[in-house]
Image 1: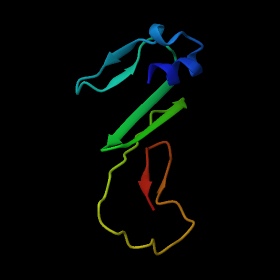
Image 2 (image 1 turned 90 degrees about the vertical axis):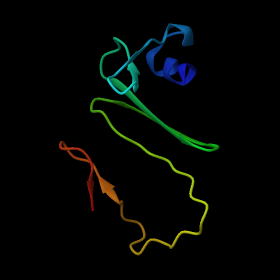
Image 3 (image 1 turned 45 degrees about the vertical axis):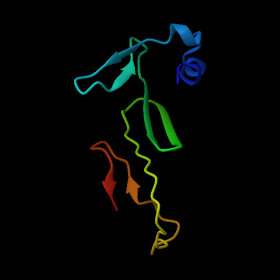
Image 4 (image 1 turned 90 degrees about the horizontal axis):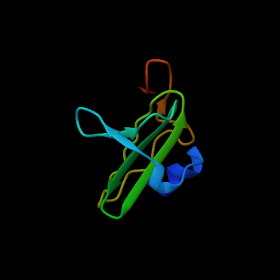
Amino acid sequence: MRAILSKYLNFRPEDVAFKYGPSDKPYLADVGDLHFNFSHSDDLALIAIRRGELMGIDVERIDRPLRPPRDHGRPLFIGGSGGSQKR
């Protein structure tokens, strides 16, 4: 995580500092508007990095066949100033 974030910050990985929120969720300390979010499940991992607004992500391993989406090509969630909204 530090190695990836260090590329965005032009820091050495060991200089990337984290703080922790009330639910022990890490965030970058004193770096302006760069935010990240991380999710993992079994051997899957997902990281999102963004400047500006906070964002949320989630990944989950599902060990059963999924039905194909009914509406191909359209996003399931859209962003906005109020956060993500299901479409």
